[in-house]
Length: 310
Image (cartoon, rainbow, N blue to C red; front, side, top):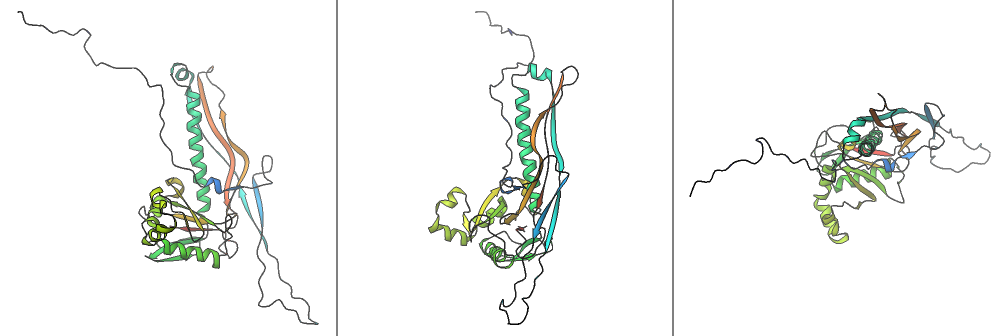
């Protein structure tokens, strides 16, 4: 029998498969947690100028006694009214694309661009809201496994040496309630938005584990911190909003009611660019006119609303 001779039935070169999946996958983005706790400032909008001034009334001094003496005038107290201004800015980003890419692509390019811009806008605004929270005057850093030092200057007194734990949360809660007199966000509860390293410190604390063994045994399974000392904990993985220079310790923002406001002259919206080069050049952008700011930029009791652990 003659030997078989094998030959190629196609030209030489690399074989390629140009079949494209019917689904387009997109990269995941971090979660937006801060925007839900920002209050839009009423009475301000389009055609209202470049800034809004928020009037604030400080508490009256509390005397030792409010009793009166016959024949002596009623003592008078001074009412202090202050204000803080928030100046709005333009915000936005755009993505250009061509009519050729839209005409030849299997996917709707305009829809893809709009979806990605919405994701970007959500994170940028969340980062901006978090940045406003972090301008607070009350700063706390851990100095031991069971103690925190709280500064009222707007700067940390030092670097944290230990992760956030239950004992530190108790001290922070007591300071907010008794010393700073921060009003609760809802009902009797404060809110804490914390990074994953900060949350890990809490969940690894034996005190937390012992407590939840009986009150909520599913918490560890679900990865939930739950409530500690009337504080609701919310985790965020958005490093742009709540990153930390010390990654293994993490950051946390504790706050009560009326902490940060958003002055909006024009709500963020998607805009299609005017096509150029006879319709060949296209673009979509998100655009808005707004700014974020603390209502009370002080550390005074009854006025400070935010405490930053980091």
